[in-house]
Length: 149
Image (cartoon, rainbow, N blue to C red; front, side):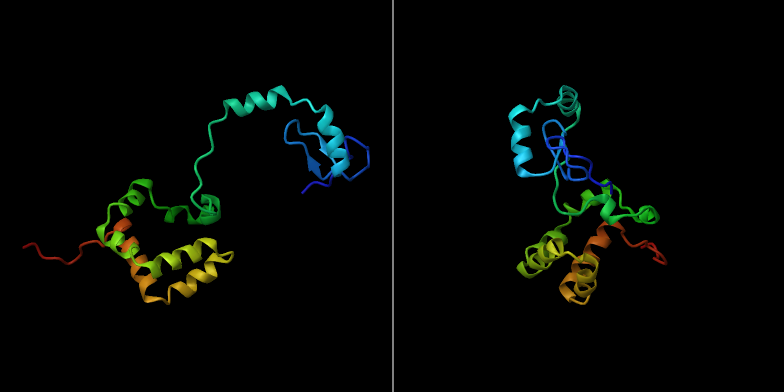
């Protein structure tokens, strides 16, 4: 992380910890912010860049793909087509009707230490059933040693 530079309003060295959202100018305090705001001119190029950028993807939770998968985990990534099959699973829908399971999933989403909570949830039979159901949809078991009828 970079050290703060000088305030663009009062000139205090190393004090500019804040940036104007309109123009990007650095300042150090509320009084300097107010002074700057009175004469702030938004940068045209920033506004034009924002207009040209595609809208951000909708967020459905606190996890991003980078939070979940590292480079070494890329081989475990499930393709979108397989993930969409989860929505078509009647068994999974039936499980999600259970209010206790929904509470467990909400707790997992809100948890700061998701991996620790996930380890605890894997001791819960209902959650294990849910996880197994998800896995059976995205990775159906291979039919080995099955005799044709």
